[in-house]
Length: 117
Image (cartoon, rainbow, N blue to C red):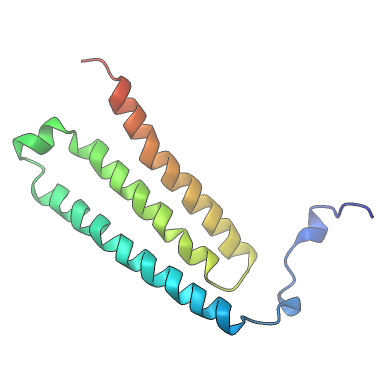
């Protein structure tokens, strides 16, 4: 059997038969866990903005810390792309949010680790 071309691999919305009961429950569980995990990120980002002039946070580079928290939030938001209807846009959003979130999380950490004063 020959491999399909890229154009033949496009998702056909008419061929999707719908979610099973177990898949719906799993998606609800994933969304609930994602929302619970997003709460500390939002709180940390708010505290970072409110107390950005504190000496401890100034020493920790609030911009770099904010980028790390923002990257974590983007990685968590990528879960919503997986739990929606499988479309090309949802799959692309999942990949882009996960990749951008990973980059925004670890690039500042690596830069902060290797910077020279």
